[in-house]
Image (cartoon, rainbow, N blue to C red; front, side):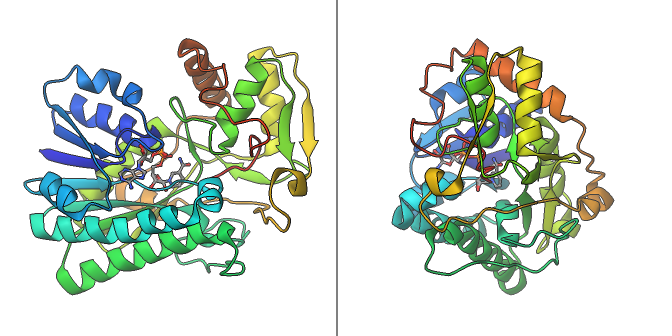
Length: 341
Ligand SMILES: NC(=O)c1ccc[n+]([C@@H]2O[C@H](COP(=O)([O-])OP(=O)(O)OC[C@H]3O[C@@H](n4cnc5c(N)ncnc54)[C@H](O)[C@@H]3O)[C@@H](O)[C@H]2O)c1
């Protein structure tokens, strides 16, 4: 099986690459290394079935050349998370909208199958008990950059759906809910590596707001096989699937567990949103997935609990010597409980 992973040098994409290489695939990663790193692909480079091409999904010709001859494509390349979009709105919008359209065209030309990575952010402020795939999207002001990540991913989904309906391009859409694990960096406000990094450095854990906002973190090794199972199941084409964690936890409780499990001397410091973000920033109080649809189609059940996730991420940060600020949040940036997706 010849597989192309856009964004494969990133956090989720590099785990997917390792997983598919272990299964015997020929894997080509296409990535511009804007947030991903070659270090994430250290193991992959040892495999003769692995190939890396540096390039951007905005370069349609390069993308088309790489995807030609592929059996399946996982489109993970994106400007990821709310912080990056707020800081670099134009390049992020172009990557997340035009880049995806380019991928869809290249996949259509190659006659391949596609897995499109979308996000729970598309549900916006909807804080229902459990969000199912047909839940309403509640987005804020279209002029607030904070909402453009959700808006762009929503457009991606609409594109994918139309390519399936009008051209028969086999495309499955996943809405990932706060996926975490080794190799995720804290540079763009991702809460788990940031808080664990702060705990390991015995620094205050900066939790935004009152810390009572909740999330359901899912572990990358639980999610990766589900991405593959979905794209290989023809009943998933033209459909969207939630993939999220099973355990709802407040960010304050997460911080407390992190302090306990890492044996840290840190304490929790609540930082008002106005201080962490531009005035008027809006965060979701809850984001809880209903995974029933993915469970019914491919038997998806998240296995890894928060305690294990903390241990695995702490071990990864220690072993990579990643506690020097290089992979962590920048001082004064949103290095806290943004719970970015
Ligand atoms: N991690 C999460 O919790 C989460 C949640 C929801 C959705 N997602 C989605 O999953 C996908 C992967 O996210 P991740 O967490 O691994 O983030 P990541 O930043 O580690 O990976 C994104 C990768 O895309 C690459 N990239 C960015 N712009 C590119 C471009 N123009 N051309 C080529 N490559 C480009 C980056 O260098 C990086 O390697 C993204 O589409 C993201 O929106 C992630």
